[in-house]
Amino acid sequence: MTANPSDLETRIRRKLTRQHFMHLLGADLTLITAGRVEAELVLAQVHQQQRGFVHGGVTATMADLVAGFAATTLVPDAYGVVTADLRISYLHPGIGQRLRAVGWVLKPGRRLHFCEAEVWCDDLLIAKASATMAVVEPT
Image (cartoon, rainbow, N blue to C red; front, side, top):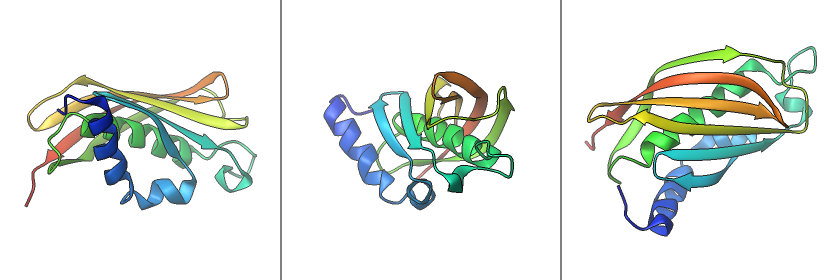
């Protein structure tokens, strides 16, 4: 873990340049601290399913994104993480202007990090997720 918060943010933002799917969706990380990450997405028609709600895949992607990057903040720079398990409960349909996802590490480990995430649409909690992130060592 990096001691200086600005160094941590610089390291994570460098890794974000390779996060192509996140950029395709239009999401951006808004808070990066050790073990906790937040992201936002301004909603557009492209994010909707056939009834006009936020597509469940977009919601799950946002949860996965923040859980994964929360875990990434706790591994050395040369290491990475990949999703080993993601479980999501959809609580309400996403109807609004903006998604905000919050992810944090419940228990870091040498090989696995156990994480949680919430996805909010405007001021309503629409999904809750738990994720297991596997630590990937450098090759």
